[in-house]
Image (cartoon, rainbow, N blue to C red; front, side, top):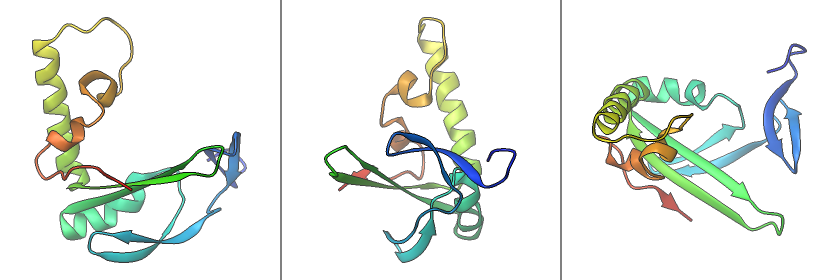
Amino acid sequence: MTADGNWIAARLDNQERVPLAHNWRRIDFAGGSAMAIAIPWGDLATAWFSLRTRRSRLWGEVRNAAGERRTAHLETANGYRLTADGTLMAVQFLLNAAPSGGYYTPSMLMGARCVEQLPGSTSIRVE
């Protein structure tokens, strides 16, 4: 959020700023549908559910210039367990590999679907 407190950092229609809470919609999660809101901090949105159910349900959507839409769904262990297991996975990977220097996201370093290898994770479903 910017200093004025009214905007989030996001890219929508090639613009880098959109209003906070600009989009509400019902999303079909694995355990049923629920109302959801677009926010920049997904971990805050899922923390309550993660701690309550010991699982995180993640959902994402992208659209291209032609208006084609794809959604993805993933269920993982709760956020704290996921972070611990993901850190151990990255350390193990780095002990056995010698990537060139620089910055890597987990998917850049270990593959686009590395999260699926973590305990408690399902396969990413793209629709």
